[in-house]
Length: 112
Length: 112
View 1 (cartoon, rainbow over the protein chains, first blue to last red):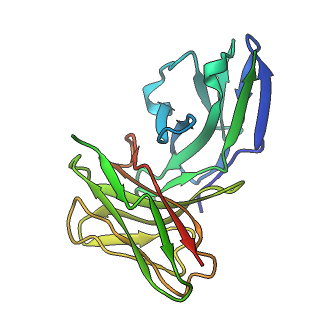
View 2: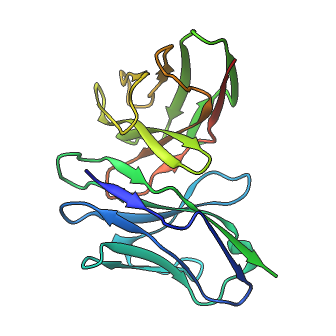
């Protein structure tokens, strides 16, 4: 069964400091991985996805198949990065085709 | 105005009554999802559907039912068998499993 684990419920950093939000997954195959973000009083929205290999708002995420991880990183955190972040995994063609599973979420707080 | 709409925003029901939450999208997306969001537990998948007239159970389907008679609609019924129905419910849609999911604004259900 596919599973996504975000070990940190809360993460606090100061403005300008590096930030890393951890995500580990279990999946027998090649998953599609995503990071979603929910800012205060806004809808949950896509931040970035593995397949695009792009940097959004200074965030990047690298898929490490050996460690089954997809950690989200930003070298210099900004106050506007404060939000709830979710890691998600989609089954692109296995027995649970199309199933989109989310982790427990990490609340990031960036202090001035 | 395109998007995904959940209604109502707040819903109150007496214990023992079934209640149906609405989710409509005009994005022409094939896939639709229902999640339950509880503090500290992230988003848990209730049901998902990749195509009209077909849907699959997610990780916490017990006590819930869905239908997908039209591409744009994916209503969720919370039955009296659901032991702890008070929660925040999120609906989402996407073109397919490799792509971005778009979320509704959610429905907060309170059972008294």
